Image (cartoon, rainbow, N blue to C red; front, side, top):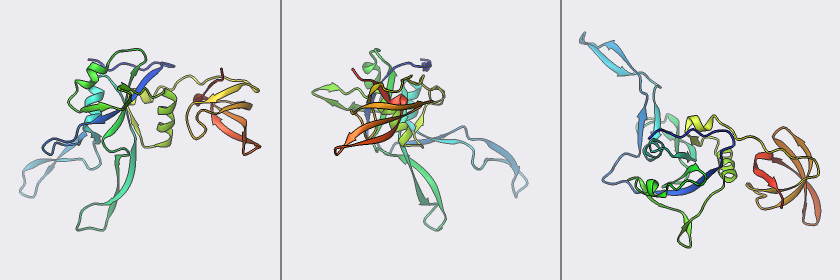
Length: 218
């Protein structure tokens, strides 16, 4: 199955997916794109070795889901850790921010749960009342901004949604972030940003927002 292209402005359905625990010590990570070079060993024989710094370490469940044609967002965190127990040298390593979970998406309206649950790496989907809980595109984009190191399939990550256009004085609803669910009035609009006013503790307070996380208030 070929990977679907995410076109400009395409609405996505996202879900928080729980991954199966590793079975029999199975690998969670692998390295793709490793480059090798030939060199002459001390015994005079030609040999091959990995080019230092080549290759990209990927999360195996993430790779399986991508190959099945799903969009995948894996929030990651960076931590310093020792190279080995014999050295005090440290290097920065990337680890999943939510152990055992990631976000999986596909074009809105498609019925793909049967495909998702058929994958050996998937244990379940976050839900309520026996139904999967859909996560909005805006919330996932907000998380992508929050986790600057988060990974999204390269082709999809290069495509940005068309920014929402608003005018001064419009009433809008905030769809993601600390002010999620609030309705505010716009004071200024510039590019992809907007300045709004809201009442907080009885006072009018100005806040800066990103237009992509706003929708027109009903």
